[in-house]
Amino acid sequence: MLTSLDIENKRFSKQMMNGYSVEEVDEFLDEIGVDFARKQKEVTELNKKIEELEASMQKYKTLENTLQNALIMAQSTAEEVKRVAKQQADQMISEAKAAAQKETDALEQKVSYKRKEMEDLQKQFDIYKVKMESLLISQLELLKEVNKNED
Image (cartoon, rainbow, N blue to C red; front, side, top):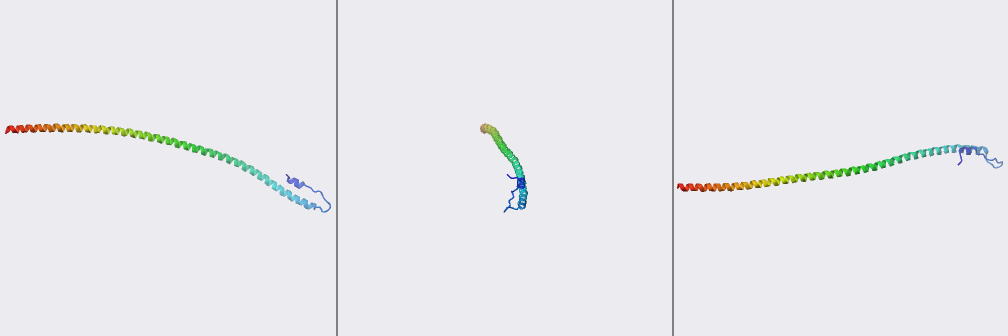
């Protein structure tokens, strides 16, 4: 690749006839040399900028990978938290159902006991009624007897 110095230092052999004007060629070569130097400087700066951008891009790719890993870990953690919460909720529901069933069984047992108690009281009342009726009948008979004897 030619450098600006190569272009500036290039010399052509002089010809006697039908040759180029040495001054024009030199001026043109000087212009090309300056322009080429400017372009070469631009290329160098652009290459440096490309390197910087590639370095920045690598940083961003690393950051992106880190963020993706963090996101995956956060999703995984969220799934685990949801799974544990569901297990705990299921366990709480099971415990609540068991406690409710135990309470229901205890209440049913109390109701059954109270019914039996009521049935026993009803039987005692029936027995009492029969005894009272019997006593009243016997008293009525006795009164009838006393009334008969008075007559």
